[in-house]
Length: 173
Length: 164
Length: 177
Image (tube, rainbow over all chains, first blue to last red; front, side, top):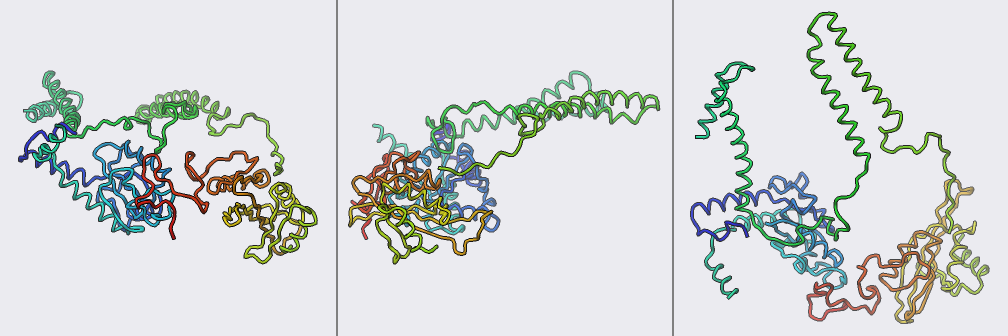
């Protein structure tokens, strides 16, 4: 993806660079305002003063996907909305992450059996990094999800991974 | 090397004396050039580092116009409301007028009685010309956001009947 | 005016249109024939004794046993600011219009009560009743290319919609109670 990815073996420079880049990315996850239904209220509660998402650097909700790197899908996704979700996800710039918040986005939620217009899980539409169950999840639960995502980002590496390279070579061969 | 050059440049400026004297010609130029280079270096360095480190994933929809997820109809460059232009123009004119007031106001206190009255009448003339323009804008409705279409008073419209 | 008084007023004014009077229902209603519905509607709105000028809701029913669909119009009176006499009890009234399942057509009353515009669109979208004379009859909740009318009792879920699978449970395409 980037020029530096998979170019160098692990070493002190690459790992320091990794640490710095991951520190920057995990501590400034800017979400795109994407509240669709009731889970949005809990997301707003998370952004408000009692639970305060801003102390994690993630309180700057961007109105446009171009400036955001996190999409918290908060609320039921319907078939009518699914194409818009996908288009907005495509319009976000790399690196981008998706948190599926609430039971509806995790697997259809309460509308799983009778909901004729509900997409049974937003991972049928966009690739999801973290699932946060709940109906709605408490703000602390969503915060836990964001912190898990931060952990995940901190463990990404731009160094050359011989196993992944071999797997890719095997795929292309 | 850059730091020492910068120090030398600024040192030369400091040694040169109070404002208005400066250092000797070439030292001054070196100072300014170094300052510009460091400034450019800070800006470009970040951009260059970013070019190496950022992921590049090309996707056709990334270039598309953002319209809250809907497929965009038409281009983003549309004809904007001309009232914004009028507001901006009026602002520029009066802002520049104030900018001209400023140095006059700063030095107004100095000088004798005759100088002061002359300066006052000069500035009143300048201000008067602009005030005529302001009154024109006010009278002809360029300061209203919603302009009445005619100057005759309108009667309230008869209440429309709700009919099938 | 009570429900019985309004019903008898309608009966004497529109002899053939009123088919059934049901005072014992939870919400008492009168069944009106579909062809005469617009003139009955106009009478209900304009008659000075009734002035049912507020259409609160249009509901639609799927009467699978009788092979018909119905639309229920829930009406009420909102007195004007300059009303001569204050209504001691504001009237409410309900009218049911029944039509066949196979060819479900009801004349639209969007010209009588503007609220009927979107309510009838919703009844069309979810139940499939076509309202003749409606200014803009198209789906309002489901996407334009949705197939079927979801609130019918014999509706089957879509298997997939534009590539998104309709259900993740094997062969579940209608609610199973």
